[in-house]
Length: 447
Image 1 (spheres, rainbow, N blue to C red):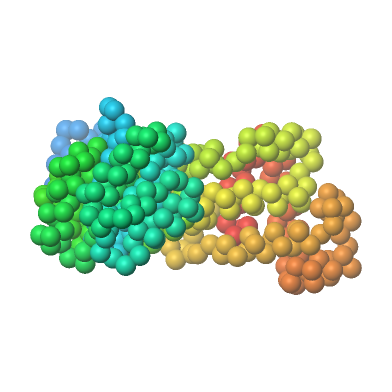
Image 2 (cartoon, one colour):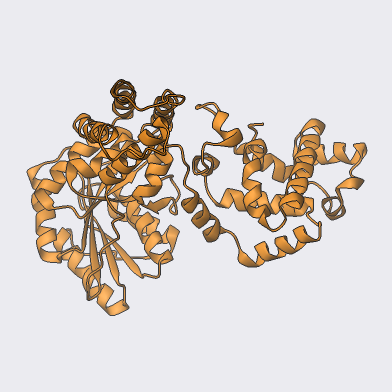
């Protein structure tokens, strides 16, 4: 996400480098490029113009820090104003007396049911006991779909057999939650292709009767400003407490994320970054701004590592590294850990655009199949070969290639990559787990 916007902002900042002083002419030239970047990035035009007016006022005002170069001054001001635009991190709301009811709303096809499952999984991972229920009695098999989602992620689903009235279904779920100690109820509501009075009347009734702690609107980031406008209408008629942007990983522009909060008045609370049920993240404005500015998102990367890396395995790897015992089997296990962390495109997007990664072409794609081929090659080796790479001669390489369905050249390439990784972890010692990220590009077939 944000690739195009980030690239254009970086170009605007680059044009300011080498200037001795930040003049009005320089500011206006930079703002024209920044405006073009924002509008092409699908940021709401009114939001973009208001943002630029604030940036210009600060850039030409007394707040400019004299110790910074012109490009650094503008970067700081743009960053500060983007943070102001997105607001503070909005934490989920919970009722003082459980269960808390979260009403999930949105247009048909926006991903409400899947996002309900993602939210349930997120809540479970954060110490809650969610119960999901569908009040969509119009779309064929809507309730069955949610039941299948709930089964896949291992959370409870209220079946609501015997009634087709949304309010009665929701009331039954509340009674069940009190009996079985569920502290959050996720109510997946019906959607429409277009907002209509019948839908809003039903949602208003559910809101009045259930007193939800959260009324969340699911917005498809791929449809850009249409999602923003729909969210604004829902907020006007329901009073949203927050927005969840789905499919943000597939939107290279990302403008909806920057403008939806300002237009609707409801903060973005979560973002969906993939199809898997764990591909949901809390929305942290400062991290999003860092990604937009090309500064990466190291905090999210660290959290992803902490969630997926087994601490016992990590400690054992550290011991092996200190003793220079990093084997091909360890190499394979590290690739598995990386794959568990999610899409490699996402991981690389979290790394600051500095060093070798700064020069990657904007359309560079990580070939995740390469990691699977590497694993297949290592799995085709014997235990002795994985333990001691030096015994792998030409005859063994041919056997390994046949066993993994690859070529001898690919086997040679894997051995070369392993030796590079071995040298790197030897050099960085206990910090090898972070150091391995630097080799991500080559491992994924970019080098």
